[in-house]
Amino acid sequence: MPQITSELTLSDHLGACKARWGIGRMHYLVPPGLYAIGTPDAEAPVLVTANYKMSYDILRQTLRGRNVWLLVLETFGVNVWCAAGKGTFGTSELLTQISATNLAAIVSHRQLILPILGAPGVAAHEVKKQSGFTVRYGTIRAADLPAYLDNGLVTTMAMRELTFSLYERLVLLPVEIVHAAKSATIITLILFLLGFFSSGSVAASRMIFAYLGALYTGIVIGPLLLPWLPGRSFAVKGASVGLLWALLYYQLLGDDWSIPQTLAAFLALPAVSAFYTLNFTGCTTYTSPNGVKKDMRLAMPLMGLAILVGGILLAVGHWLPGKG
Image (cartoon, rainbow, N blue to C red; front, top):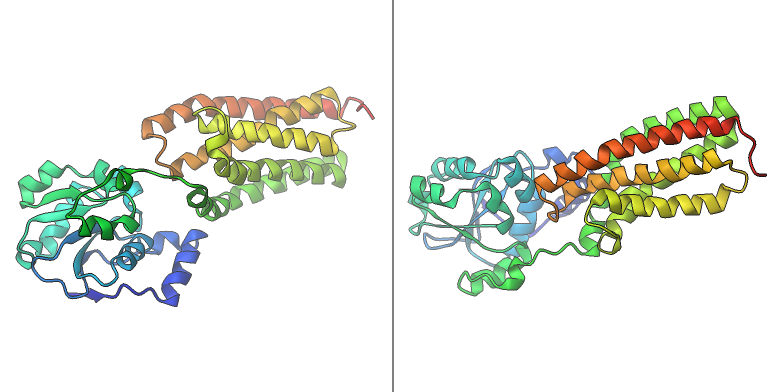
């Protein structure tokens, strides 16, 4: 039986840092199976998690000084919440690992402790029916597990409370920036060529500045200000910060803009920001899958139309005299 330590090494911390920046993130995993933390006996609790190594590391670090079993499911390097939505942190995989590890012969009790965010993927009654193990949902955060274990496996309201603090949003931004880098590079190159061959290098630089400002407003400012932005829709929230960026951009460089150019900026830039903030719904538990689909179904056509009309207005404005 593999015995693991609760102490994280420098390599673990560097790996977590790389995963935060999207470097090898989908390959940051541990083999599924049963692990021993400390020296657990047949009465020791069994905690279940995903094989995304960051989830695994956070959990084993939290359980420092304890004697517990850790049952790791094959989620292909995806965290518990996302894997539950995709079905890999689910009933079938849980039953597979119970059988593959011969868990029933290792522990005398028939109780499994799962993270609350894994609940959407697991049918507890099926697990009980097919394996004899009862599923208990512990806490949302791994940090609350010691208190949960010490409190007789009682989950308090605070342990069920889902937070999404400024820090929790901040640590998600690096991977969002990396994911957007490839498409942003292509779009930036296209804008540079369009601007350079139509109006010269200054116009090209301004177009790139406007686009990158809207992009980072949507990726960074939108998520950070999420609780204070208007509306429930992430697209609306993104559009609102994009509008602020358009106003700032106009104040900085809009003295000689024609009316079509001004309208183009106030249509296209909020649409770009809205697109990237809408993409952030995948990082939150605030929006249900149906809510995300609804938001995308309504917002995506409007974003595309705004960018298209903005592009046409920009081309028209190119042939009209400016104010200056």
